[in-house]
Image 1 (cartoon, rainbow, N blue to C red):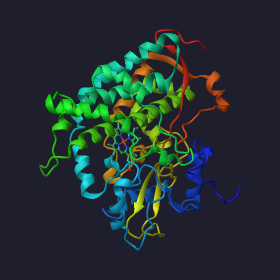
Image 2: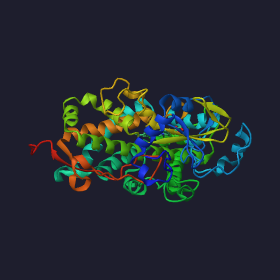
Image 3: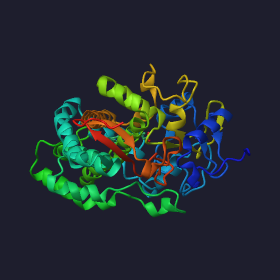
Image 4: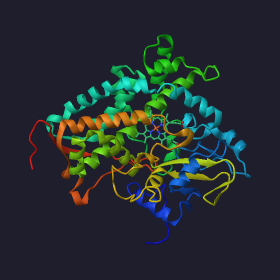
Length: 428
Ligand code: HEM
């Protein structure tokens, strides 16, 4: 092996091999400059936490969706680029969504969401999630086989967030079709093609939902959102509600459906674990945490150094993009003993960084955990033996899985399984 690493942001081989790449980089140095875009790869646990939890004003989230691509539309000048950045913020991809905001503006917009995703609302939603999982399983149980992402995970998560938001039942199948796989990131200048707002296709629909709920509020989350105010009592610009609602709709859908699909992959590949979880469903939550640690659905988030600083002794000039590898951090053997083993009993399993950390840490994590737990509980309860389809994915010692061409997400394209329905005797 040569010492020259491939370009993580364009090499298709690294899509499924990202973890070994991050492990390799970490063993050289947990904060390392890559040569293609001049950005820093942060692959260590402590180092990632340091970047994600620095005080306001040091690292900006403005680049958090695409990282070093496209490059900044200005040449960083000096040890503090805050003013240069403020001048171009609105032109940067995804800048309309509060995940890219910083400081007070971020806190104000995030509060609109966190005050709505309450424990009480999730608890009320659990019944619906159980019924939903069972209805989806009913559709494929008799054939003893299914493609997990399209027939189960995708629908379970899209309908779950639709229900919480209060999207009319009649519109849900249409939304299921509209929201497909994440956009390719490896297709030449794909980042430019994504454009300033990749969720624009949802705008008209969500503008309409918010207008309706401002006139006739119901008991759903979008109605509350449409009536909400910032903490200081001021009213957000009218389009803010629609932007927040469509981001909420999209943010958790794909990530959670890939988590469910990945979890089923582990079950299919490990009959003993599968049987243990059927006997001891109380361990399904820690199983899912280990899936999140081992294979985080978001491989990387990104930050931009607004001021010159250092991370783990490495100089970080203002204007540097830091690629914070949630996969690298969550597989760092300095924090997770025997990190290469998939072990649902590890005591610190919830320390993983799959939901990031700090002020941008995922506010949808409790919902994602609930959706995934219910989906896996119901699937295990309704089946006696889940097997990975060898026709589609090859034999146990040479599996073949496809992933979407994105460097930010670990996004399995399809997962075909076979199983024995629970009320039938399993065949050997
Ligand atoms: C397994 C499922 C999920 C994973 C792995 C995940 C992961 C993440 C990560 C890594 C971030 C932080 C981005 C950063 O630091 O720059 C984030 C932010 C966010 N997530 Fe999730 N997420 C999941 C599910 C959800 C769900 C179900 C929702 C909504 C109901 C949601 C809504 C959000 C929002 C609104 C943000 C932006 C927070 C902010 O910038 O303050 N996520 N998510």
